[in-house]
Length: 82
Image 1: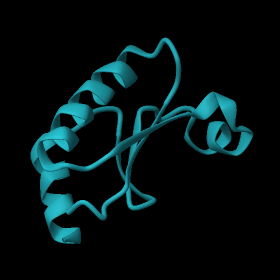
Image 2: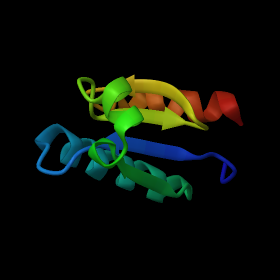
Image 3: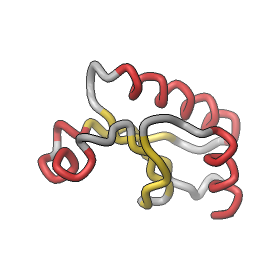
């Protein structure tokens, strides 16, 4: 599974983003996947596309979900990509 790319799109001072980041760090750490965090407010296109939906979770560049981490669904998605 280490070939997966998991990205969290969020913003500074976003409580939901902080919770999602902590959840993803824990899960990704358990299975050896690196988590990349991107602040949508640093990119005009990302802010326009995802600004109202943060936090947004991407797996291998594709939108997996937003607003919160659904752990079982997230783990199942990683397994299905494997």
